[in-house]
Length: 327
Image (cartoon, rainbow, N blue to C red):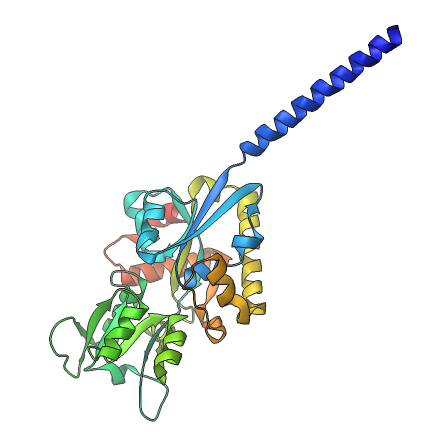
């Protein structure tokens, strides 16, 4: 009888421990934090493409990915909605420098991927001389595309106007909300050329039949006398998370795997992106290398490149004094 009672007591104790363990596991599971990752439509979304299905967790965190309209990406960081944000590098850095946004710039997500496209007789290369006296529809007023194109024109002593008819020493810029609007301006006759980013440059050239282009990255390099292309979109991470070494290592590993996946699956990227990112995604295989996805961890040299770029396109901010809070 004593043995039976002892056995019953042991079984009861085991049962209690098992129930407690299940409850504990349920509690632990429910307490796993979910991190939000946001990127705008276009090339920045390409930087997180395969993570949506391949990295639903990173370093024990549940990951939630969303691609938003470009006009809404600033809210993701300005209102601290997302833990990880890919957005124009000048806008994100400015939010940190002037609004004390609690983020760190940890990577260049996308290097320069802008092109001026249009038609030219006898050559597929458009030059600065070709656009003098012409009207250019340009995306990104106040953002990296517009600021970079404007900097290049000024660096080459080309006057910019936004009204009237340009002289042979001027370029008239008409601002466009996106690549489709810039293209519409050319097709409609109100502009001669369009400045758009990849993959739109390739997609529009194929659709409309543009036969020539100008590489904005090469012109910026020539203007500054350096080989490094300018940083177009940055990867910003909430400050507390940026100090989590194991998470950041796992995040960069996932981003690198995504770059490999893109290079090995070029023909399938558009279909995948339309299913998992946003329905209108278009990433022609021939444009993917020119999309210039980067996502490498910043070092001192790349930080210096960013500061130089910001000083060139937004000289009103004392960027040198803001380095410690940006990076």
